[in-house]
Length: 133
Image (tube, rainbow, N blue to C red; front, top):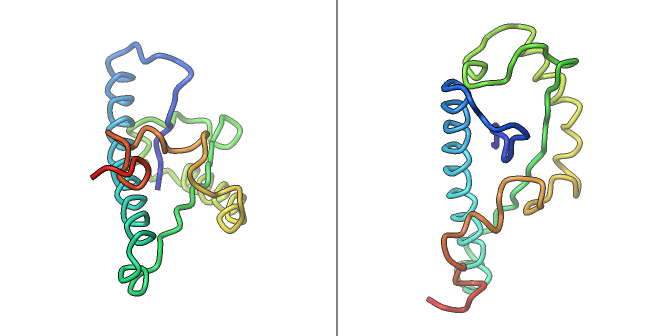
């Protein structure tokens, strides 16, 4: 589940903003590593019939969800991840219900350019793409 933005419009300037952004990037890096692992295992299953007979490929889906000031007036910073304010919880639940139908259609397919990285999750070309071990 990607909870951190991939990109920001503004550069972080204050120390709190820099710490928040560093936290977001760390979370996205971990997500990228998981996505790489899943795509790598899917590629191995596509190449090996014995694996394909035992396991099913994993379908990755990403549903973007953005809160703005009309949804919730507070900041969505690092501290908000621990916020139990009922207004924030209700705003997140409401947005989740609005986007739930996306989960089962093409709008949630991954990889897509506007979601978590797909080209950037690879430190090198994956073996399935490059053909090299």
